[in-house]
Length: 484
Image (tube, rainbow, N blue to C red):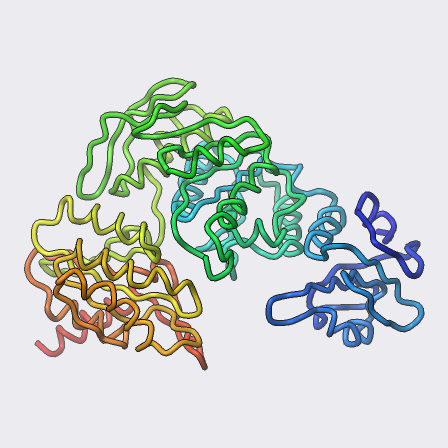
């Protein structure tokens, strides 16, 4: 493809050099530049891509996409734009021949519920014999082929490359989580969304967005990229999303008047049932993931799939069989207590899982959690207070401390839990904390291991270690058997 074709329609500040040159690839990492590549200089928060221009040119870059004036050798074309993040998305979409136009693309955004909702939609569409691509926090997949997921939403070039691969492998639909970071940083710009879904909004990522209004505005951007939307208006910010959306939207709720509603909700220890009232008909629904939050996720999946013309028969079958790693996931212990692994890592999600468990817990609810380092510190005491108020006993421990001192993070959490007069203990080592919870479990207890969920690692300042809580629990149970 010629450079002039890649940049047609793109707002240009200035061009130096010829655009009548053939381009063999696009790269935003200078180490991946090959002969004939366009190198896009992303001005990041820690590293400025413009500083790597000499390496990119040495590796064979024919053209540079920049957002500030630079000096380069003759023979290299320089295209200056206002925002190289957007421009990268633009040229990547054109380079791969607009791949997202070739399948149904569903984007799900929100503070929580994105992963579960995407799994539900995928399950329904697979019941309908569709080949489904999925992009998200837990995994990327094309049909039965599983690919690693480095972040919730890939960088724009990687995303378009993945879309292109999905087209080649003849997917019918792609369902993906769309993070606020991805929307703000143009990772999903120029993607052709058929349906956008808003699950909810609560406190998170303020380390990046700085203000809650910025966070909300980032989420709303999805509804300028899609043809139709579905919005949860039981969430206090949902009405604002629906109001500011640039596409027609359906609304969903349990409590409010909405286009899609759940009524007659019945909670069981391992499932939830309700009647779905929708513009496409009414139906009794069962989901084998307990909790009120599962109703909202199921409504989102129902509305999305109804908009895609799916039958309620397929919807019911898909929802009954869906499983989601690390979301209210019960780990078999062979003991007279229950261990649940859940990804809850925000105040709302921790409150949701603890309230859900408390509704059917025959004895104590034991909450084990920590907070991530280098992330929003203000939520730590809030989560401490929530656990203190809802759990019968709390074990504060590490999550992914990253570059922060684990003890300092725990101190922040303790500031909230101390005010609740709760019973708790702090154990810095997460494995030791889990071992303590198991050793001190009483009959019929429910132990909630919150924060890690599907993750199989733990991030420290100087290293990342393998840490899969399912494996850790089994190892500890085996150790305790040996000790007996």
